[in-house]
Image (cartoon, rainbow, N blue to C red; front, side):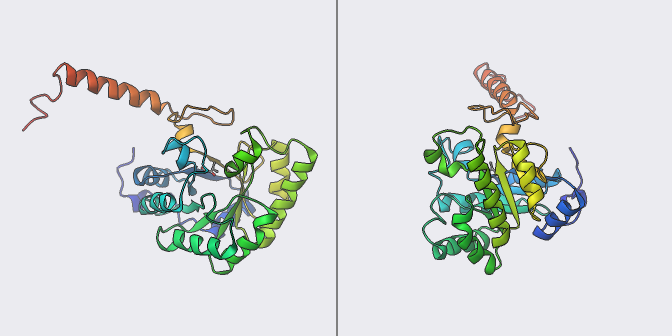
Length: 276
Ligand code: KIV
């Protein structure tokens, strides 16, 4: 691990919505991951991750809920505050939780404003397409960048009834195409597209000027995002095939906890050197 101060080890200039657009134009892939706490955010930033999403997946991978539906504004504000404190270079995007933006555009605007003013995020993410474009426009008009989210939108899990791949039928695929164009037109600076056929995601990415960041959406997107706890092998309740595990930290942590437990029980910890 690098021992350089963070400002020297940063890979390049601050990531902005503008520089993400330029990355798309140059064909430079965007690397995004999620974070919910300060230490992880700091490591992602040092690793050169471009976009750090404070996802409402916190409900599942931090709080142990079955879905993201129960996550509240106050919880998201807390996660966003601690993540923002750990980041210098990456663009920090805060997920708007279920029912914080669906009731009306005024409430959505107030809540998006809280994410920026109280929690330090630089952009917010909303799930949905044409039906939320009025709200997206309203938020963008006051100067808060909005990221869209199409395909498998986990806040609608009770409507879908399953986490299986979306838009495999032509009608839903057409809907996704129209939603992407509408969100770009409404002023969204980027889109996440989740768990749809690779061919559709690639087509969507080519149809809009804004970056399209895929999760389970194939290699034709402008960037990729994963939930950090999934790619580290920490959250193991599901293992969808789109998750590549870059580490098995769950096993490593379990081993460490077991060793500590054994040492304490056997009075092998602490040693004389570890005492005063
Ligand atoms: O909440 C989240 O982590 C997300 C990603 C899966 C894109 O929305």
